[in-house]
Image 1 (tube, one colour):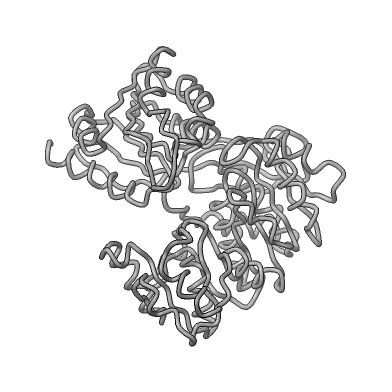
Image 2 (cartoon, rainbow, N blue to C red):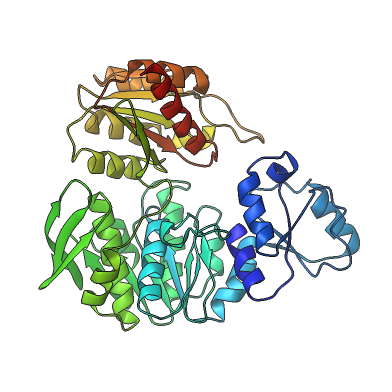
Length: 441
């Protein structure tokens, strides 16, 4: 929501916003940066929703019972979803939408970085903080420009159906928020709506099948494609590869990021940017917050923050980190009882298949954001499954207690990766691990 607010404020629209975390006095720096951009922060008590408000825009995360919604209903003020407003902006622009179950934020950030560097002045609306654009007072999840509009199109709540892209990017299709039999038609329809073409991952069989018969441009590492990487070589701090005769190096880890870069280059070619130009700009790509982001080191231990939360993302992160041989302590916090139940088998397989004898999995209890939930599964169930698979794992329900135990268990040369989504406090938890390790040193 903050990304759209910044774009609108940049266009001269009066924007007011409420957030329960603002009311609680949390994230004061972030809210201060929004205020510095001219966005008015108000209490979420309904009093600021008056006849001077043209529309109330709500995210999918808020309940219908909040006072702002009640006030809008009493006054007859239209209430719309965040994605509906974004669709209004997007569908009237030269729109590039990035969809798929993994890699959306990174590909959105990469495309935006290349188009910006090539002088095309894009507007970007991302779901993650783009470190290339993290300059106060801006939050790094949006920039306002006069050129094409690049957005991250979320499938988890079905709002991807609102967008009518010039170019649809499909990074992959795998089990995540929704069953595959619901995702397949959703993503096919999304690609069918592309006015120019769709850009599709040819290494993902589900994506290839979902777009069969459509006008498409493909990218791949392991399969024949319009844009294909060869000679892929990780080098410890990034990955080098070639596209035809053009060398490319990205300063971020992981084969999955090679795939993300290929998607970016394929899109930017369609926008008139050469492979060589894209490669030169991507050399300075700084990454996305919470995507293999190094928070720091203490006592010879490095702490990494990552958004991985489904099996494919966990595998991609572990594969990237396995470029180094040093032991890994993986702190994984699942979110939501329903999603954890659905993803249990895949998550267990990801950990048992990609953790070594020197590694250890640590899990606090499942993150619960509120609402009704059938609490018939625990992180302890996944830990027991992983232990039966022959890997070291520990369940400590309380995350603070878990942090104390992790800080005691690590030794010089080890790495800790904090994994999980939906919980804004995970990065703070990563920093708290650094502080504990430093105190123990």
